[in-house]
Length: 168
Ligand SMILES: [Fe+2]
Ligand SMILES: [Fe+2]
Image (cartoon, rainbow, N blue to C red; front, side, top):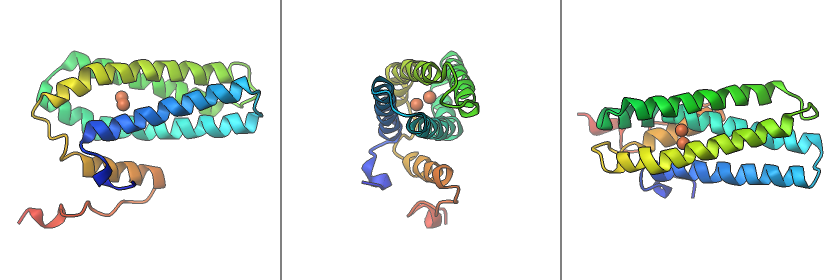
C-alpha cells in the first residue's frame, strides 16, 4: 500500500526502509555469488545508495530532531549521526567507482554490514527510547512520507491531507 495509512507511526515507516535495505544487500550478495555482470551490480548498488541517502536525510531532518527534543540523549544522537557520516562516505566512494574496479563489491558489502549494525542500534536504542517518550511518532508520518517522496522524485509533494486548514 503506497500511502501514509500503511504506516502506524514513524518507527514503522523507517523500519520498512531498513527491511528493504537488508533485502537489497542480500540481493547484491546474490548477484556477486552468481557472477552477475558489472552493469547489473552497479544498477543495484546505485539504487541502494539512493534509497539510503533518502532514508538518512529524512531521519536527520525530521525524526532525529523530534526524538532528540523528547529524549535529550546527546551521545545517542552523536553516535547515530557519525554512523550516517561513515555511510555517506562509503556511498560517495561507490558512486565514484566503476563496478569493474577492484574493491567495488567489497565496498558495497561493507556498507551493508555497517548499515545493518546501525539499524540494530536504531531498533534497540533510539526507536525504543522514542516509543517511550513524548515524541509524536504518529504525527510525524505524513511529513516523513511527503519528504521521502519529494526526495525520491525531485518533485515537491502536495501538503499532507488534513494538515493545511487545521491551524485556524
Ligand atoms: Fe539512521
Ligand atoms: Fe534508519
